[in-house]
Each structure stands twice: as C-alpha cells, then as structure tokens.
Image 1 (cartoon, rainbow over the protein chains, first blue to last red):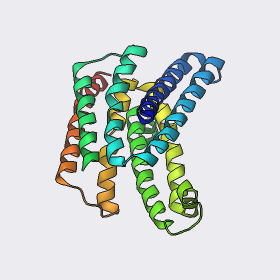
Image 2 (image 1 turned 180 degrees about the vertical axis):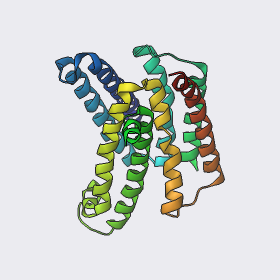
Image 3 (image 1 turned 120 degrees about the horizontal axis):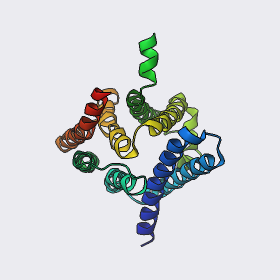
Image 4 (image 1 turned 135 degrees about the horizontal axis):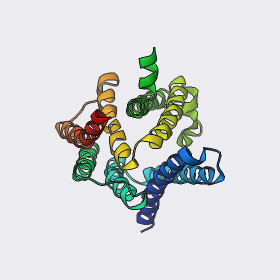
Length: 112
Length: 133
C-alpha cells in the first residue's frame, strides 16, 4: 500500500515539476528571469523534480527496474494531457496517438 | 559561421542535443558504475562511483542536458517537447548495443520501432508548422 502511494507521489511530482518549469520559462519571456514569480515557479519545478528523483531511487530499492520502468513510460501520456489541461496547450489527434505509441514502446523496451 | 550559430539557437536542434546528452550520460554512468563496482565501503550509497572519471563526465552532461531542456521549454509546448524528448528510449538501448555490447531482444527491437513511429507521428505536424515559417 505504501508503495502505491509513493508511486503516485513520484509521478505527480514528476509531472508537476515539468509543468512548473514550463510555466516559469514561458512567463520569463514577458517578465524576465529575475522576476520573483518566475524564480518561485522555477524553484518549485526543481524541487518537485528533486522529490521525484529521490522517490524513484527509493522505489528502485524495493522493486526491479523491469517492473518499475514501464510505469514510468506512462508519464509521457500524463504530461501531454496535463500540459493541455493546465497550460492550455493544443491537443491534436496525432499528438495523442504519438504519445500513446511512445508509452507503449517504452513499456516493450523495458519489459524484455 | 552565421548558419552554425543560428542552428545552435534553434530549439528543435537543442532538443536533439538534450536527448544526445542524456543518452551519452546514461551510457557513461553504466561504464563508471561497472568500473567502481569493486571499490568497497559505502557500496549502497553509490558515492564510491565518484572515483571514476566517467561518472564526472556524465554529471557534466546531465547538467548540460538540463540547461538545454530549460531552453527548449522556453520555445516549444511541453505537450510536444516531452514526448519528443523520449527519443532517449531509442538512443540508450542503441548506445548500449553499440558501445557496451549489450544484447537487444526481438521484443525490445519492437519497442524501439514503436517509439520511433510514435515520435514520427508527434513530429510530423510540427514539421509542417516549421515549413510555413
């Protein structure tokens, strides 16, 4: 049970980290990189990615990479969808199909 | 010269470099980790691997890849850049095959092929937009 919770937090942190970084970099064009809001967003992004990094290591200590890695593949689809929902990026059918294929491919690469 | 400079600021090319750096770093981490396997003390912290120059090289590449990634995020939508950055899942097995002599099973070749098809599908509409510009 704990493992599942750690898994979920790890994925959420990885996705949130990328969203924060993207948001920071996009807003930095208008506000400049030293703007307090940009620095906050950037720090939040790096912090989230750091949390996900260490949770990944913790999970690797308990599970085989071959079990764990395929689930990582799913982050491709999750990040694409999250970017559409939270950053209002445009979702096209090819983008969705392509992301799903990449996820499936990663699962196959890591299973063997 | 001018053309070279322009291509280095092209976010799509920078994204390619990002993936190359990550793939090279992963390969170097593997070499460095194997090299330092026999050094005893603190084995499970991974810190002993710092005795290998490969590991330091990999750390530099990881930092470079992060800088590239930040630059990419500034110019390319996350929903396009992130799927494309997964080209590393093609590059890493290939690099392990070429440089480390690791075997690739038929199932893994299939996986690599499917990732490449997915990348092509994501990249195609993008190529069209670029052409218009």
